[in-house]
Amino acid sequence: MSQAPRYMHRHWWKISGIILLAYTIIAGLLGPVPKLPLLQETIRNLYFHVCMWFGMMILFTVSVVQAILYLRKMDRRHDLASRHFAGVGMLYGLLGYATGALWAAYTWADPNIPFAESFSTIARDPKLIGAAISLLVYFAYLVLRDSIPDIDRRARISAVYNIFAYVILFPAIWILPRVLESLHPGQDGNPALDVKNDISSGMRIVFYPAVIGWTLLGVWIATLRIRTELLKEKQYNP
Amino acid sequence: MNWLHTSSIQLLQSAAKPAVSMAELMRSDGRIYVVIGVMLTILSGITLYLYRLDKKIGKLEKRS
Image (cartoon, rainbow over all chains, first blue to last red; front, side):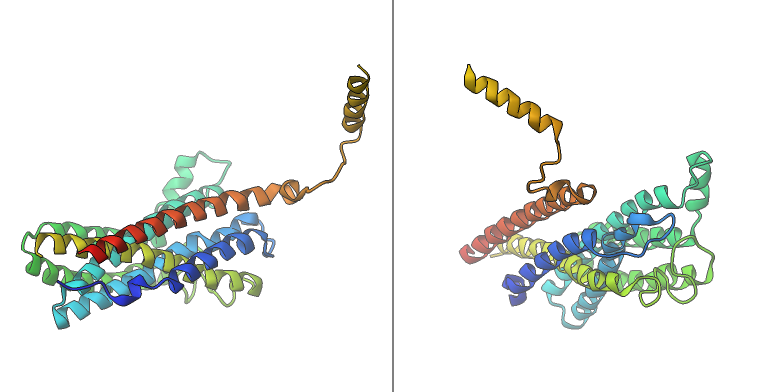
């Protein structure tokens, strides 16, 4: 059976990920931020909520690359990598959704009307619906995968589906939200936020390291799961 | 009884002027450093957990 790829045993990228996250927490809470009405200190959520979505997109990209590599080389390791990078990407997507709901409850919701009423406006937001669609498409990936008992067919079909799921991401979270009205920041050209104009340079020197840090943490979790699966396979077919 | 007397005077004195500033970092700036402490503790807990899991899997990989 195949060994885990060597980068998974390296420590340097895990340590740098943790250092970047510690920097994110310290500089993210103490660093200078623009004073904006309504947003106030919640603008610091940029280093946590937005990073979940950036991390999700990067992890899904790794997943689709691994799916294509599997279809080209038929190596089980690529299939496992594709599955588990998508899994951590979905975890990040769910966390992004949950943190976004909390953030929206205190910035978008009108405190003067019942929450259910403002919720009906918020829930119709095209960016939220797009994100929900893309997450559901990825949940279907897991359902499809686990419903096929034969290992090789499962790997092949789910790799093909993974490519479709990745393609769905583009209309659902990159294109549609740009053309529709939304409360979410980043109209006219950028789906989440315009990094050059929406946030100050003081925030950017925290934001970019934060994205890298959160992504590396996700990669670490995914590699641990891949290594566990490889060990399991080794145990069953020595 | 004398020591009790002096210490209670000291206690009263310290209550009268609360502005004794010593290592006030964790109480300054709206106590934001407490939040940083909490978040860093959570991060170090997750790191320790992942590190131990990593080592455990590494050991199993060597054995097989």
